[in-house]
Image 1 (cartoon, rainbow, N blue to C red):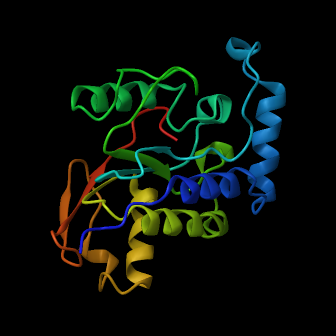
Image 2: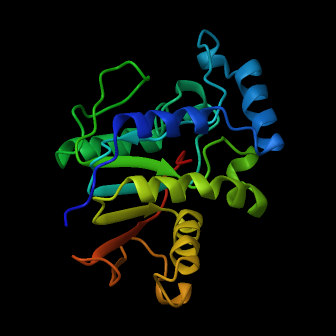
Length: 213
């Protein structure tokens, strides 16, 4: 039986729940403070300042998992990987490989559309020093788990950074999909085959570029 695609209603309900999340007081305070003080270059911006929703095609076969929003990137624009140098590289690459409708992303209303790709993160609020705590990762993890259930067509997972990989592997381990996390080492351009799906799912790793959050 082919995978069942998520309904638009289910995806909207998920996004509304995520954006209104208040589980991590430290992260919420930090995001709001950054949005209040702003960076001089963006003083005319109305910062998003909330948990940043995921972005992409609900029927995607490619799932990209980053670490967390950048304080003056996604926390400002309200879109994952939008507004910082890591996003410039990511969206250009997605455009060149046919997954994105345009080579760049500057704000939520710029017309960008992802085809067959979906971008999320291990944490959805910008953390101080780009370092969520272990508890904050755990509190945000149910959102990623729910997305994994909704995105039933995924065949390739790209994790950007060691912490994103650790979060994803913990989910697989707790679900009995893998036996040991140590079997899947992180490294630049490393590729693993996950035998629990048909066809076998491909897990790829990549290092975060400067500004990737």
